[in-house]
Length: 357
Image 1 (cartoon, helix red, strand yellow):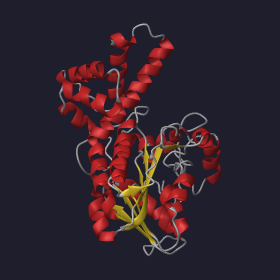
Image 2 (tube, rainbow, N blue to C red):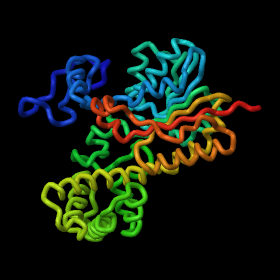
Image 3 (cartoon, one colour):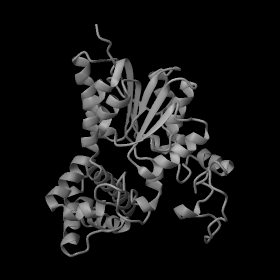
Image 4 (cartoon, rainbow, N blue to C red):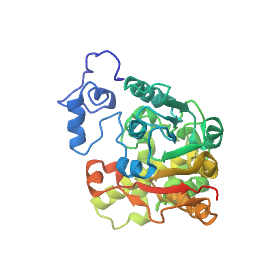
């Protein structure tokens, strides 16, 4: 329930605590139930339907945002980073924030407007950050740019979006459900070799061959997975039947199944949303949208995208377009990882656009 809606009677659920996503009415409305949200955060969890921004201090320290500057947040999400950057602007300057998700961008924009950020200082853009070149031509150049490449917790937690193998829902996985084809349709159109390649390239899945064989068999038998639990069942069974899992104890097998499920959903999400292609397009236009002396910070969450960012920054530094490109990535502190487990896989890379000589 959006924070600015009138209070409604809570959903009925069995047991003492709500389990289903829609039943967690207090978590879904943290503005009204602040104590409940604070309790969940204190335990290292994330309230359903919300998102905790990662490495905020490290990002703000580097971007050096001061009043009067103009910036671009390439992934608005829940607005955590955007809000902190707006606070740094102190009412002077402008921040443009991009998000491909038509559902979440409306919620976040409403939340930020309610906090007093009018269109004089904040402009949301329903677009994909791969179109950074076009955005830069219209609104740039920018003094600071942030790209958080992680999936928002709101998308992961909501079973209706199909991003998580842990909850049953339609196998969709699209950032923008109004464009492209859902993961169920995409998966049914791929050959066994294509599925295996996708799992290997996008997630380094060790059971890629066995899982691809099992999915292709299900498609041939007109049992192509339509839901997250159906795909989870196929993956779990494939790992159990694989020769690679022989000799594993019950606990080890269960752990291998969980990790494979997570990697398969990651690989499929990357494929459905053309994430690597989008990142390539963004990085190609990045020097053009940055003002001289402009700063960029990019948060990555898996090896493939981090490798692309690292190689791009290294190339641009050798070409004397970027400077201070961090050779070593910055990781979230132990304290932050404890308080927010989703920060554990994050890597922060930074660079500064050189001024013309």
